[in-house]
Image (cartoon, one colour):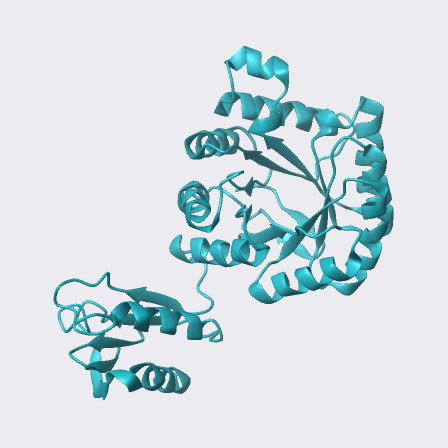
Length: 345
């Protein structure tokens, strides 16, 4: 069990549900574009949003952005502690920094004291791509132990000024290194952990790496909040995160689609049906399991745990509920009949 912090009104750690985060890719000083993207992310299910603050123009936009959104706003700061102080004054909900790269200890102290005065948490973001040179030399590269030692060095800087409202991330582009680092950190500290695998790539491979890295850690009971990092529209990060949480058994809200992989017995366009059902389920918020199966072998029997489902035949299919056949339906009516049944649940 980790200790709990609060990002805005959202609890992180201490047994609270794992929260989904993302990061905007608009210019932060373009307030209108940034707000528009954040609102799309809110609709998709993002619970905490982060914006890059590379300069004072971005810092000055933070207040206007925060006023127009409905989820907590985290600012991402590198090198210039004055940007952090400006964002804190502007009303951000948390600060993400690497205490080792914003200058001397007096600057770390200034940020810590400003956050403490406002009751804001700090996320220490350790990244394999920016590990301190002495640690790289000591461990011979980016290793789990190097990432964890870096995190504790940064924690010590904050704790020196009696600041303990901390969240930690230890990201690497290597899934095994990332997983081992988080596991080691969870054994040595009770600070809440922000999960992520960095630089994962585009949607397909990035989602796979994140599902293994983040999902594997969640299955072990490790992690309090998460961001799936993709070279894609940030909305895709949020959708992938929701799928990962469902696959790990940590989210029951909204529908869960199960479908068979098809085989030589299939006589119906199962792939097209499954894709259509998946798309239409995006507007359904009932916590149900929906099955799309290819034949009577994998139909009501194997999918008997589903709340509702369809099983294909030759140009037609079966509509079933809790393993019991409701009726036989022509293929071109299957999806409509399925959603009519979902509406009745």
